[in-house]
Length: 279
Image (cartoon, rainbow, N blue to C red; front, side, top):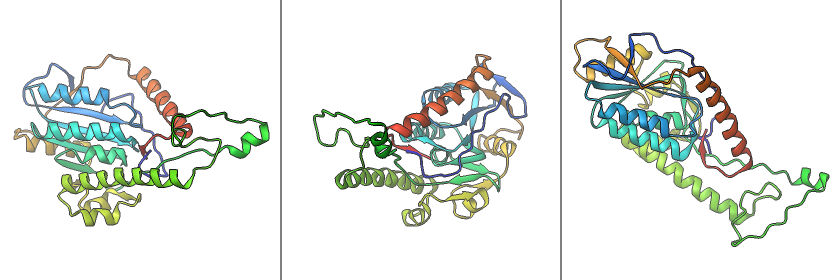
């Protein structure tokens, strides 16, 4: 499910952040920019971009621009892991936009440094399962499931009946396990005591300013500040380096529509099936 976050923002862009933007191949001493926007449903494209920049000798640092309310647990963890791997090779700075919560925050902690605006919405460190219970509606319309299953827990989360106590215990254990993974990764990545992280990892959201006071981010600033920080960490002589974006097929508007469709589809699937996600 999503890391528990009741306010959802969808941020799509037809353009690029201001600055000197190029596409690979790049000039030497460049900073790569990877954009993580909208619901996190498929890690593949972002993983490819991060790998592309990790292997490019001309890319001296990377800024990951995040505008995401979260998404699937597995995909968020994959992106977190790949950002952390890249950060071992060259500096990575996470730049938070309007919202970088739940899975978006999970991805950000893979970076060596995190920059957010004072009003950025972040945090939302929790896990949630959502199941529709349509039992009464099915009774009214005369619908009934006939289920044949190989194990008593195979149809867990069926919308035609309430959860059993055994199922609730099993799912709570799964959620608690993933929640502990999140807490552990935050503590290790941000060099914070697990006990301190656990106190605030109850699904609440924070402003960027509060997140900084808690040690969840490093500094307040905008995208350009994140670029300047990345350049400094890479030892570049300029705070306005050449910005390099992954290879683009020129179909940004169609991509935007596809992302919207994917987000709607993901929410539809979540509403009908027990998918573990960050929201």
